[in-house]
Length: 358
Image (cartoon, rainbow, N blue to C red; front, side, top):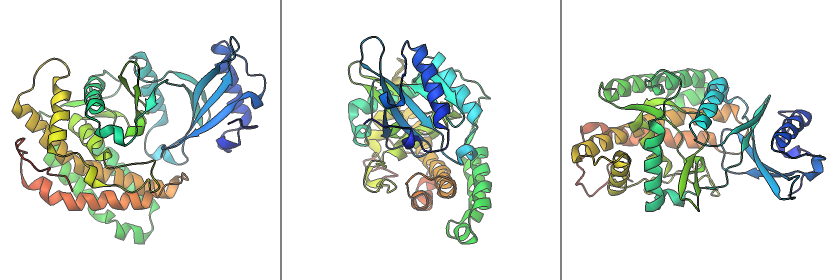
C-alpha cells in the first residue's frame, strides 16, 4: 500500500529524520529515493514491544522493490532493557552471521535488513519438523560468545521490574496482583533453581513464534529481535519457548493464553533430545531427564518474568494489547503450577502425562 507520508510511523520520530536515514540507506544500497510517494509502508502485526513496518521502494537498477524493516521503539520500554546494550547485541549477532544487518539508526528507532524468510505462525511451533530445527538453532544460539558476564541475569532483572511495577501500579493493582509477595517468590526460586552445575548460555529469552523465521528454500531457521537477550540458564530459555506454545498473538484475542497447547511430555522430551544431540553427541537418558526437569521448574520463573512485563507494559505501552489481562494469566499460571512443579525433584521421562500440561 502506498502511503503519501509517514503517518503510519506516527510522531515519535520526525518524518524528516526517518526520510534522511532511509535515503542514506538507499544510497548505500545503490538506490535513490526521489519522493516519499514512491515508498510503500506496511505495518507488521504481532510485535508487542515495538512497532514494526516493512518499507519498500523501487530499485534504481531494475525497478524491483527493495525491502527494509523499520522498527519504532515502544514508548516507556527502556525499563525492560538497555537500548545501548541491545544495539551492541544486534551488531554482534550480525558479526556472528545471525539475524539481519543493522542498516541505519534514528532517534527513536532503526532500519534493519529485511530477511527474505517467513515469520513462523503459532501453529508452526507444533510442527515436528520445524520444532526440530528450532531446537538445533537454540543450541547454536546458546553457544555464541557474546559481550557480558556469563551468569544468570533473570533474577536481578525481575527484582528491578518488580520495583518498577510497584512504583507504577495503583494500590489496587499491587494488592490484586500480589506484588508484595513476589520478592519472596523470586528469592525462593533463585535459591532452589540456581545450582553450580547448571549450564549458562547466551539466551534469547523471548522465543515466541514471531521472533523465529524460516527460509522455505534452505529450510534454515533465523532468530530475530534480541531486546531481551542475555546470559541465562539454558533451561530458562527452553522453558520460555515451551510456554510460548500457549500463545497466538495473531488471533482475535491475542492476549489470551491457551495452556492446553503447552507441549506434552513426549514433545518436550523430543525437543530436548534434539537440542542436546545437535552437536553430534547422543545424550543419556539422565541428561535429558535433568534438563527437562530444570526446564519445567524454570517455567515458574518465566511466568513471573512475563507477568511483571505485562503489568509494566499496561502502564507504559500504547500498543493495542491487553497487557494487564496477559499479566493476570501469567501470575495465575505461576500459583497454579507451583505446588506440582516444586514437589518432586525430577521428571521420569517414561511418564505418559505432562507435568505442566493442562
